[in-house]
Image: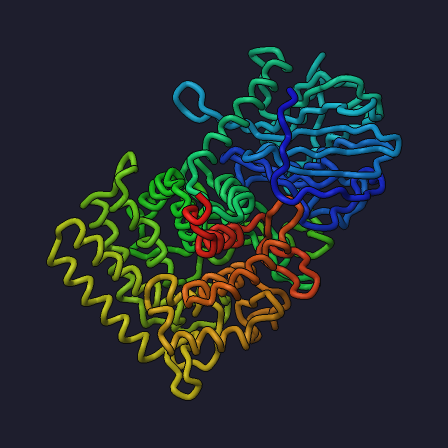
Length: 619
């Protein structure tokens, strides 16, 4: 089972005291495993603290990440503990989603835990079972190990019934049964009895199904094939010369956020991690925001990973053909669900005790007009890219025209904006710019397809929207663009004006706006999305994607030296595995917000692609 273990990310030795059973999870230094059906988060002590089944937005069978205020014995985790542990090291096998955690005791014995969710080609399709495999290997000495497998059901409210067989344990919940197949003595697992690990052992947790082949052979083959899948996928990426490790880790993690069955892309894998300490700003991000998904698709397209776009466009096509009068919600369920009714879960105490824990998201009820531009922008490359198995055609164009008509009709109408304000409606500049982008790209697609009349009509609409924005989003008093028509305030979304091609990045009006945004929103090296009080008061933490937008904008403006310094600062604030959540404390760099956040990972890729030296400079 041993494979080479070159380190990816930012490996480190951490001096750690041996945790008690169910010790409180203190931060977002978490590894991510998954296979595009589900995912799991693993902390530095080899504890799986979050995993939802049977899909990203399902019931968290491991939920201690959001229950660490309820005491040591409350469950919701899968722990592999080493007695007398003093050090921990965690890293990914190079260019894979296979996670390794090494636990060392005071005597120098080392346990290596290799975690992964199988994903590889089998029978001309991708095999991605709802299965976690944990391989235990005593690489030095004979560590004394204790296994604590304590799943919960119904969002932590239900403790499963347990039955055992000769080589398996069944954890029976109201709606699902998990089966652990293992060659670890069953009595040790059930009794949580410490034992000397003197040889490699395997633990396979998944559906209540018998194995068709021997456990050790199955785990070995699944690991080998999964490693091959990820390395082969990475091998086909068009990565930049510089910051390759950062880009590869971001790309793999974005890939893991794809729900391949439908093509949806989740914004993050968690719910209710607050944006800052002491706040109720905590939301459920385990759904598909059309805005966030657009940014993911564009970032991966830049790397040549157009397979994600093809999957996502299947999802979008289903949504667009099922719209009510052309209306698109900003967010949908990963299986096209329209209603994501938000409710509070009292059975979980919350991340570090930050209640409430939310399931569902009220944003599905919002009017967010930028969504129409996000859909058209995400689909545009499919009309021009000859690598696709099914390039977009005239029929797809006519379907997108319905989206464009809504964009044109709503470009000067109030909405909740991209920051999803719950009680304030304005004509947000960023929403109008995305409505312009929808019309602009439809004009370009029509010209490409040879539809001259349609191209002229969409160009005329784009020009009209463009003129409206220039007139109404420009503040003569301040000499800058502002965040809403006839408004006075700023937000970081104004940085996207050049990114989507609305304005030349060296236009003096845009340059003045960029400087004003930095003066108002930049705290050290981190950018806030806005500073004006919203529905929940003043924001306290920086919003990572906004910092990356600023970095990219500086690069577009020819200020590459400044951009590189800020980018290096952002990379230094990632966790030990090279991952980011949604928000950062500007003084301590502590991660807050849902995790891993696709927006933030997109920023790593886009900034690296913008700033990297060319391959020709060294070849």
